[in-house]
Length: 473
Image (tube, rainbow, N blue to C red; front, side, top):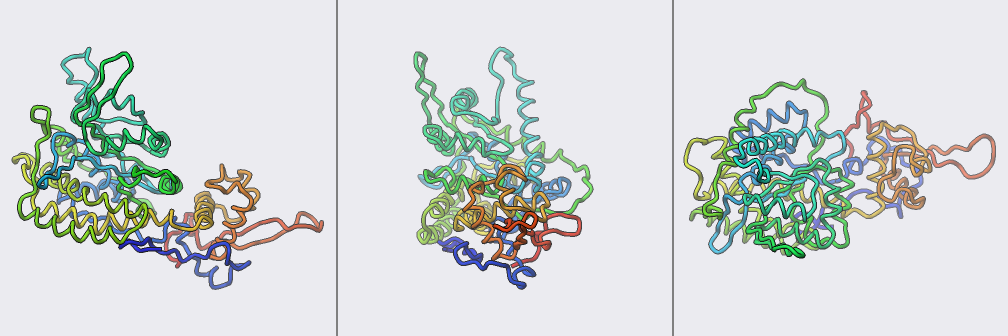
């Protein structure tokens, strides 16, 4: 399988067709933890410098207080800022125009602090919307909106038609939204919402609804198994290719939460919301000459990288060309809002912003995309094995019976693990990886088939019974 330069990272775990019957001593002492992580591609470090001085300081302090990876806070800030800028601004590069729209999803297990990482940005957006509603001069008119939750195209059409600045969809566990959003004709609506184009709704026995610029940014959370379902869908038509995937290593341990000064973030995000459209149209922020030179050079190199890719990975990489301009627009305005509020609003996108966007894509977005997509590039047996071992370690299961797992001893089995053959193959993969080993027993003294009992490698747990994600191959 290909590397991020065109091929996905190669897994080093044996498939069920060539595993040994028992884990050898070396594997048991040195297990392959890539199946526990869900991906064998490493998690890159978030390049906090792209946010600017004050925003990066706020993100770091907020993440520490939430005991969450800083990636979750920072990515939510980028998507939230894009949504607040909305249709007030667009970025221009000659004849090329991109809107201020970013879709991001925070990936992790149930205990990985995804929601606490997203919550501070979400809370500020909620507060800004409440302020708009309270200051609405016409109480009979529909209340102004800047955010939506679990919604449908029809409901979003009505809200977007009444709120021309654009919207931000924010959701904990976004997989429920995906289930309906990826089915025609809903999928086409959401693809349009990523591009901020004109959208017309034809309604029976009612006047049509024209949305001049359908614009929806997205930030949500989900678990690895749900991402696998999204990326492995046979009918994927580009919906998944539009996301920034954020899948950091989990942050373990606990730090006493400290109150932080949230005023700077509240004021900065409010400043973004205060940016105005001109005559119902966005203000165009053109790349200056030096920024255009940097963008041209990067885009030429990126085009070569994309040409070497294949399948859905090539589709995702191809979207990063437009994201270069979108991230540059967001970074330029984040710097103004956090570090230079009180000065003139940005009217141009300078070289620094484009370089920051290029660094963000090259050093973070692409490695994170590779890490996420590598989950779906594994053979089917390995995918199921990964789901099984993560279920077991998340519930501190030290011994298990394969049939019991299929019957729901530890909750509804993920993936296809209810199937006996799938479970057998998954256990064989985990055995070869040194993550479990068979402990066959019989009920009583009766002859017959042995029970499919297994021991989970204790190296996966630390002294406190928490999942250990350090070490291993």
